[in-house]
Length: 326
Image 1 (cartoon, rainbow, N blue to C red):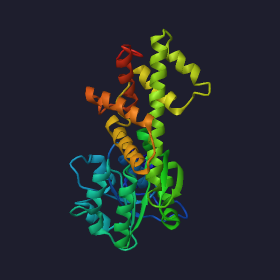
Image 2 (image 1 turned 180 degrees about the horizontal axis):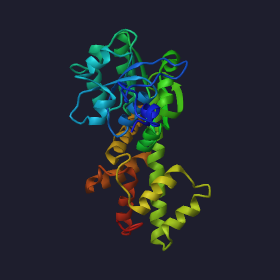
Image 3 (image 1 turned 60 degrees about the horizontal axis):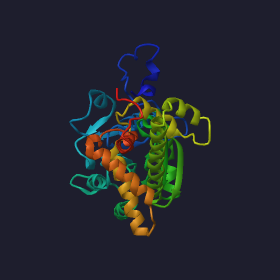
Image 4 (image 1 turned 30 degrees about the horizontal axis):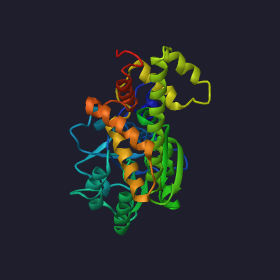
């Protein structure tokens, strides 16, 4: 799971007394950091693994869900406050705004263990408005704050190829850049605190609407009698090509809806978009209609399916399936 951390010993056994899971030295010119990483989910676990493999010391919080491999790879603290007290950087990768608030400011949360100069990096996808409020509270305690949501899903997390959209100061970004480079490929400082989350909301609008467009096109083509796999193959060579047509179009045809990114999480992100749109006075009509299609799949028991399963709602409306379920 963390191949770079073990690379030194692939050609033979570890030297006597050596820990095969010990962090290798940080690359030349980069500082080895002590990091509290909170949120070992589908994406957080490989992200923490890449940081470990890059030579950093990682502490995670005690949970029943920690695997034996987690416990071998990372130090384990009883709570977020203890993990943060021994760290220079605290990274959060949790599902939603209330989860971030609880981790930061709840009992034995990050804020309790925060030292002046600690850098807090929230890589969750949450409300831009709440993000600004959280950053102000952390700043009042002497900490720095970056919001750095990601795109790329489980595959991107495992391959360290995530797109990372960052909000915060130039100085905090420079400090965190080596960490981001260990987890992602396309790392951009978008603007001040909150700008990263705003960018991620925009990303999720585009992703949702493109999934809907691909699902609509394949449903149309299939009901018209064309082979959807051949249609997808043809479209991949034209202006309609996209990463979503490539990956999610294939999922729709092969009926592989095990989650990379769950519908319920994309619903959460579109709720953020629609709320922000109301606050800003911006109409998001296609975002709203796509959210209703997600809601239809969720109501039918599909909340935990991959967001490509949005096609199921369109198939119901068309009384026709793009392909038969396996």
